[in-house]
Image (cartoon, rainbow, N blue to C red; front, side, top):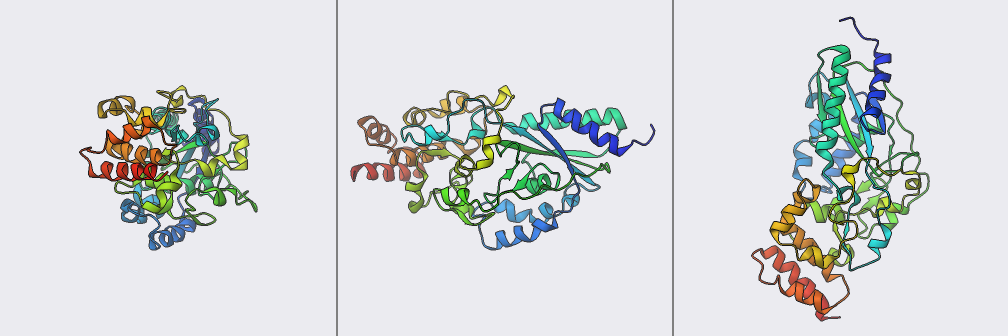
Length: 351
């Protein structure tokens, strides 16, 4: 097979990627040293909390070619995930409803995007023959936002999210590491300007500064990554957020340019975009497992699910139904659940 014209191949890859449902495809090299120092300082300050894997694999994050030897380029892709008509602000302002981060309302994105990346790799292989590649979707020590920024998919905003001036930030990222010397895209320029809306809106004031997040105060960390007790001083600030937090995206002016997803897999399941706290808290473990099958929510487990909901119920308006629901969990087998239920009941006894 003759050697390919890599400029032409690069354009073909972008076309094939769009045909597979990616809204944008960009190409970056593997030099992310600009971000390596920032990562090391972040870890040094212990801002990663109990996410010890961040520290264990810091070297691989800073050296993509060590993660997959022979890698010359990273094909970075993005896929919109916010379904049309999904309630956001209204739910946050209704303390009896549960707010779940909008990326988690439908099916788990990991398998879907990884399958599409595999299909993209197979299409490339049809064109050039055997080549080296490996697909990643938030599944390995990869500085995906740094690589996506280099690939021109957007800039890393002050809220640490990747932001695209034509698409906002409601999208997933994925990467295909490859040994093909594809044509590079230009790095995206920074367009946050003087705006600090995301830094100011954070309920727990988790931003130490622009582009610097103390994960230990972040609601997404507290409700998803943390497996122990949620710090007492932060519980009242969590409100009705039971899985993740989108506040720093909801306030971002660039998200007025976001587009609804075309992926039906991301359509909200079990009315999770507008569910009542009490309904979710009353799920048995069997119901939790059944209703979160194929969902990113399942990864936190039933115990943390009840923990998070107990905190949200502690922040909700008092009602006989709410008190009864909390009391029904007072003797739960999990000491973690018992602790947070007791806290929630104490909140209502002082109202």
